[in-house]
Image (cartoon, rainbow, N blue to C red; front, side, top):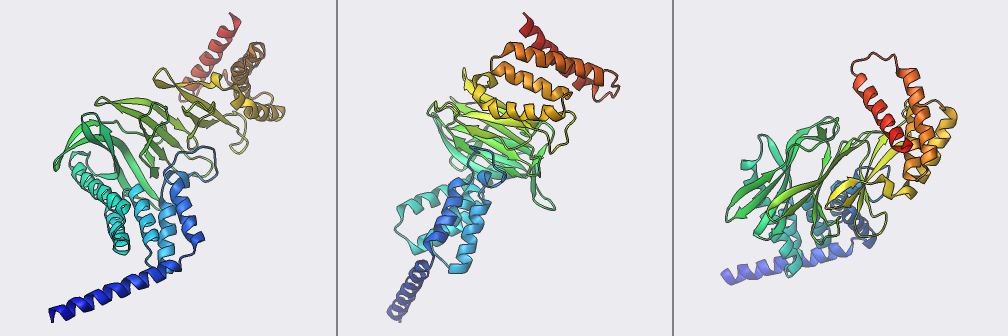
Amino acid sequence: MARLFRLISCIFILVVIICSNAAAAKVPEKTLHWADRLLATANRPFSQWSGDCRRPWDALDAKDAYLQAIKKYGRDARLLTGLARSQMLLGEYSDAVRNYQNALQLTPRDKKLNNELGLVVLSESVSKLAIESLPKSHKVIRALRYPDQKGMVWFVLSAVHQEGHFDDEYSDIRLTVFQKRSSQLKKLWQSDALHHSQLDSANIISLLLEDITADGEPDILVPAIFVGGSWAPSYLAVFRWHNGKMRKLLGVSSDLPLIISDFNHDGRYEINNWHVVGWNLSHAEQPYWTNIYAYKNDKYQLANGDFPRQYRELAADIKQRLKTYPNDWELLKYQGIICQIQRRPAMALRYFKRALRIFRTTLGDETDPEFKPRMNHEIQDIERRIGALSR
């Protein structure tokens, strides 16, 4: 009876495998490639501005693509593997474990999948252990291991998670470093809250390891975005872990998702943030000013003057807007800054003097106590620039 039972079981397993392989053959290659392309771009930094400020930062689109394909074509090892990898990027470790196991049932000899399953099981374990050392009400968003000289450490991104009307919302975003010892975690370091200067929450946050400084070691990136319409307040923190210590290389806010690009092709990536300029313009008319941060002297520094070519298009845009708004002091100021960047000091000086004169004429009688600090800052900044160019 036992032999008959084993024989029936073997026949059943064989039928399942044959049916699974038959189902797999029905999955169109273009469907698989479409989902794989989404996964390949998931959780990657922006390399250029795009109207879609969501997909490059997360794996939700990839996850949905694999789920839809599985729903339509059935169980397939490649689709299940892609789904598990998407869930891994999203920190959905329990679901990722289950789908890796499902994929391995169809391809039990796949060593790569076995290794990936081992990593996601470990990530799930670290996530559960980390909760005890995180601030109250925090949820683990993602856990990534990092080979330290003194052993393996884990970077854990966490936040207070709330389900909003339209999307998830994360606040009190923090990065914590743990060292795993047996079945316990030792907290080595924890960041302050990471957020935009004017907004303390985001609805897309992620944790990435990318060598953007070309020193051969991954840098730690924490992007946070609140997806909106024409305003998508964003924040990017860049850290380096070295010799058991964490150092912050940059923390910068932006009106749009920040861009990471290698402008001068030296292997070290520059970081761009954005904010609108134009005092008298409607929001739709305002051009976006960009600041460029470059990695120099072991940290990220404001380096607009190193990249004059990047401001050609913006200079033409502001010049065109000044035809309609010739007395907009803010446009005049930023056109002067571009002239500084492009090493045209005489032209810059003319723009700054004109901006300061108009500013004092139009806003000199302003009494709003909330606006006074901004006024003082702008006057001092323009006067400082004029003084530097007049020497």
